[in-house]
Length: 334
Ligand code: SAM
Ligand code: SF4
Ligand code: SF4
Image (cartoon, rainbow, N blue to C red; front, side, top):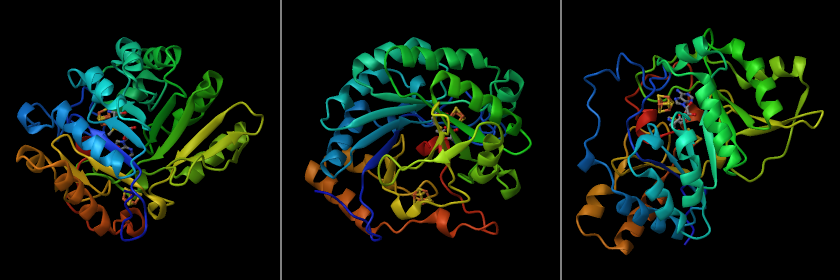
C-alpha cells in the first residue's frame, strides 16, 4: 500500500546507513575534533543485522519504496556488505544503489555488481591531493578514488555519479578542473551545497557556495543549460553541456529547498527511522524488530510515522536558525 505524508508526499526512497564508522574525516561531516580517537561508535549488537535490514526493506518496498541507497558512514567498511547487497537485490522492482567515498571500490566493484548492485555514487571533492586532504582530513590519493570509479564503470555500475561538496575558501578552485575531467570521462558530476547537517561541522552560511555561483563559473568556460528531471522528486537539478558532451547536477538544498517533493526516509545503522535529513529524533525500529513484532505490526508503525510526517526543514531554514542538536550525517547517511 502506498503511503502519503501530511503534506501529500509519497514514500519512495529509503536510505539505509549500514555503519556510523568511516575511514575519512571530512571536515563537513566527521570533523576530527569531534570524531577523534575516543569517539564512541555503535557496538556490533547495537547495529541492525543484515537479516533485520532486509526484513525492514521488504516491508518498506510493500509501502511503495522503489529505490534503496546504502550509505553510512562509509558503507564499504561494513563487514560482509556484499552479502547484504545480495540479500536486498532479491527484493523485486527495486533500484539498489550505494554512495561511497570510493576508497575500497576497486576491490569491491565486481563483487558488488555480481551481488546485484545497480549503480554507485562516489564522493570526491577535488582532483588535487592537497585540496582533497583539506576536505577529508586523511592522506588518501585522489588517483585511488578515480581507480575505484573506473573499476565500477568497467563492471557496469553505471551511470557513475560523482558527488562534490563545495566549501568556500577550501575547494572552489576545484570546480572547473572537476567539471572538465568528468565531462571527458562521461561520469555525472553533481555539486552539493555545503549543508548544516548535524551539529559538529561548524556550518556558516558564508561557507556555502551556491549552485547559482557554480553554474555561472562553469557557464563561462563550458556553456550549460537546464534539462527536465528524470522523475518527480529528483534531488539533483540536471543541466547539460550545450555541445552535447554530457551532464552535471546541482543539489541546492540550502539555496533552493526541494522539500515539496521530498519522498525520502532514512534508516540509521542502529535502526531508527528519520523522516528528514535534519531531524532531531528518529523512530526506533530495532526495539520492535527485537521484541518479536510481526511484519504487520512493523508495517503499521511505518504507516503511522509517514502519515504524521510534516518535515520541511530546508524550506524554513534561515541564517538565523538557532542550532538544534540535529542527527549527524554520518549517522543517517546523505
Ligand atoms: N561515506 C560515503 C560518502 O562519503 O560518499 C557515504 C556517506 S556520506 C554522509 C554521503 C554524502 O553526503 C557524501 O556525498 C558527502 O559528501 C555528503 N555530505 C556529508 N556531509 C555533508 C554536508 N555537511 N553538506 C553536504 N553534503 C554532505
Ligand atoms: Fe566519511 Fe562520507 Fe562523511 Fe566523508 S562524507 S566523513 S567519507 S561518511
Ligand atoms: Fe526532505 Fe528534510 Fe531535506 Fe526537506 S529538509 S528535502 S524534508 S530531507
